[in-house]
Image (cartoon, rainbow over all chains, first blue to last red; front, side, top):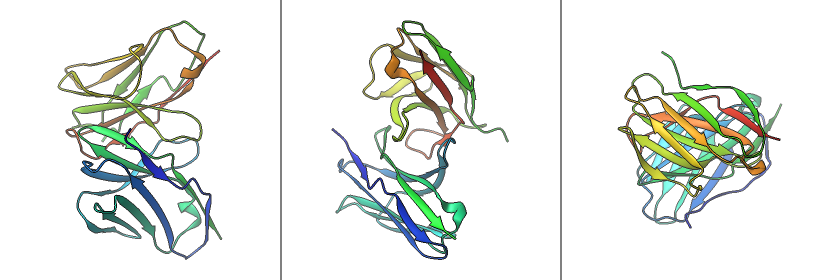
Amino acid sequence: QKEVEQNSGPLSVPEGAIASLNCTYSDRGSQSFFWYRQYSGKSPELIMSIYSNGDQEDGRFTAQLNKASQYVSLLIRDSQPSDSATYLCAVNENNDMRFGAGTRLTVKP
Amino acid sequence: DAGVTQSPTHLIKTRGQQVTLRCSPKSGHDTVSWYQQALGQGPQFIFQYYEEEERQRGNFPDRFSGHQFPNYSSELNVNALLLGDSALYLCASSLGVNQPQHFGDGTRLSIL
């Protein structure tokens, strides 16, 4: 059974801090990795994609991938209250996209 | 540039009925995937359509079926509805398989 695991949270950080979200996956054949943000009552919104080991940066967001350890993480720098949402990790292997249950992040002003 | 559109927004059905949900992909996208999301859970992959064929399927019974049309739009059909089918049904499109997917706003299905 292919699994994608995330801490459900809630993760609470003060405004301006770095939020660190982690995800582990079980299928070593996984090829592509994604982070989605989902506000309450809304659909998931793609924020980061990463395909190879190392870091991928986009503005305040950095995705990190370590295939040997089978984990992918998301760092949010200078966290803002508007970043408060559930963050979903998604792992794709041969067209089979698996999502974690999500980590709920709260950024306190 | 139109994003992924889904219809209807909300739907109420009773047990045993059948339902059809519709999805139009983002302009330029050719691949459509369907997901079921229960409250407090991540989306669960139902199946993916590319070139009008089901390319991959998740762990869902045959009551869940789909179709993709030549214009890349797609339908999700669920027969013999159960109470446990109550969920948010999400459609996502991409340009090719294994590519980043963009989600529609979903259809919230309630089974009474």
